[in-house]
Every structure is written in C-alpha cells, then in structure tokens.
Length: 450
Image (cartoon, rainbow, N blue to C red; front, side, top):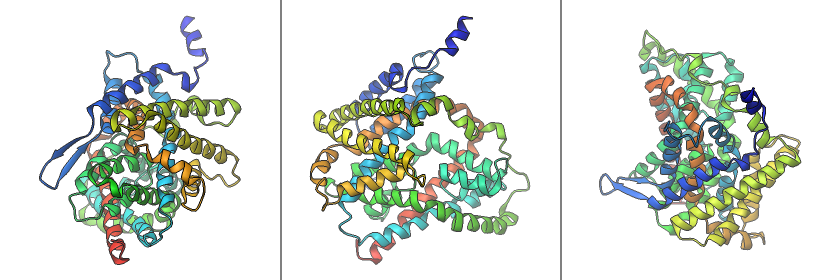
C-alpha cells in the first residue's frame, strides 16, 4: 500500500530535483578545478582533455557506481529531459558570435559548400559496414550523422520495423553516448592536419548542438584567442545551415547516393553472413523519453513557463560558477551574460509554440541571436560584451554533466549493440567531420578568404 502511494505521489517540478542539481554543481566544480590538460603525442599532434570531458565521464561513472544511491533512474530521466532546454543557450552563444561577423559574407560560399562534406560518412563508413557484415542496416547507419531529423526521414521512407531504421537508431543511441567525447578528441587531433582553423570550425557544425560545442572547445583552447570570435562565428553559422538544410541534403542526395553505392558494393564486399541488430537491442522513440517528465518541461502552460525560467536560472548560476573557476572571468558579468542567453532561449521556446509553421526553437534562437548581435543593431553594444565574457567550454561543461548522468540508463543498451555498431558510429562521425573540413578548406582557399 505504501509503495502504491509513493508511486502515485506527484513528482517534484524539474527545477526542484535538488539531488540532481546539487550533484551536477559539484561535478562541474571538480571538472573545472582539474582544468585543461594537453597531451603531446608529437610536436604537432595534441590531445586536449577538457573539463567538459571530465564532467560527462564523472556523471556517467557516478550513475554506474552502484553503491552510490544519490543518483538513480529517476534523476537520470530528469537529466535526459533537460537536454533540449539546456542546449538552446549554447546555440544562442554561437548565434551571437555569428551575428558579429555577418558584416563580411566572403566566406558564404564555403559555408554552403562544406555542407556537402557531410556525405563523407557514406564513403568512409558504408564500405566498412558491409565488410563487418551489416546489410540494409548499413543504409540507415551511414547516410547521415543520425540525429533526430534523420531518424524521422528513415522511418518515413522505410518504416519503423525496417532494418534501415534499426541501423539509424543504432548509431543514434551509440552516438548519444560517445559522440561528444569522440568528436572532441578527433577535433584536437585534426589540428595537426594542414587544414585552416576556420575549416575545422565549419566542420564542427554538423547539426548536433552538443557535438558542435564539444568539437569547438579544443579549437578555442589550441588556437590563439585573437581568432576565437571568428572560430565561434564560422561554427555557429555552419551549424545553423546544417539544421536548416541538412534534411534536404539527406532526402535528395545522401539517401539516393547511399542506395546506389549499397547496390554496387554489397555484392562485391558484403559478407555472406550478416550482422543482425535485434529490435530489443535499442529503445524505440517511445521509450527514449519519459513522457511525463518531457511534458512537464516542454508542454506550454503558465506552469511550464515558470519551470523553464527556474531551470534556466539554475543553469546560468552553474555556468557562471564554472566560468569563474575555470577561466577567471567575473562571476557577475558571466551571470549577466548567461541571463541574456537564457532569455533568448526562453523567448525561442515560446515562439516555437506560437509560430504558425512549427519552426523549432533551435532555429528561432539562431535567428534572434544573429539579429541582436549584428554590428548595426544597437543591442549588440550592450549584449556582446557580456556574452563574450562567457567561455563556451564553461557552458558545455555544465551541459555535459547532465548528459553524463542521463546516458547512464542507456549503458546496457550500448553494450547490447556491440562493438561493430560502435566502430560504424565512430567512422560516421569521422567521415562527416573530415569531409566537411576538407571541402571547407578548399572553398576558403578558392575564394581567397585564407
């Protein structure tokens, strides 16, 4: 009887989940105190280990550490459903950096052309998937970076029970768990390649806010601060284009190309025995979210407005603390900057629910941020100095602390998917990043930007 009462008792509001927020706060402090560490493999090849990586690993480890009872499934579910809310201030930061540099459009051709570099995942990962024994699953796995819009495209084209859908969901789940860590490492290693930092910045805008931010952090740490604003601008604008046009590239170019290459390569290098991804090895979209918590955060009502406000306030305090400890910036100035970013995020979520054409908050926040930061707009003189005081890595560190806790529940699913799915996910991310970076570099050179 007592268990029934407990299960039927009302859930606390997300901003009142004190155990989760307190743990994240201390994880962020620990991560920032450890600080950035550079490992020189050679004179020119550097691996940058940053607080954002520590925060994510510590969050995951804390959930998996069974004797520790403070963070369990409920807290992990709450953290999972905070992801989109806390992702939007990151995009606001990138949008404001992009708006500052829009007075020069000489780099516009490179921004557009590098989007076709996302096709690199097909050429790099599809042959490997066939060699490892994947069949039609390989089409879903390698035709895109496998984020939420791409899942929708595959389901719509092939059906939910299809092998193509099982493939895209496999890379989605594994990419959610390891994507941010992996792309941060390959970005730091890519600085040893003869590619301009602007090209690497563009390549980080692959259509995933968390991966975008994680890829940027090593670039900002390795390259001089004199070009940090440009790096942020190139990355933010590239990510916005990926959000807006990435779906069309997948529908009209990537999927048809993947189908043709599959039909050509499968008879030649495909194995006679196939890898079968069992449906129970991943969670379908209805299981990926806890719907009660998701509605508590995302459904529009006065109560939800209050929840968003308090959650963004907590997030702002945590980021200002991280910025003060890790980067020596004024806590007050950092907090004001985060309040500005949070306000833009807040307005974007409201507009998402009122806009007649279902424009997502991720697009609204980019548009608003760019406009407010344009040099000819008076607001830029007041907003930009406060936002510039916040290091992007501080925001991402707090964000990834929540991510680390949230993915703890998916760890068993990750193990079920097997090492072959992990290898394909790594090559999908690698192909997308390198393809974009190479095309961006060539385009920048051809247009005399570099």
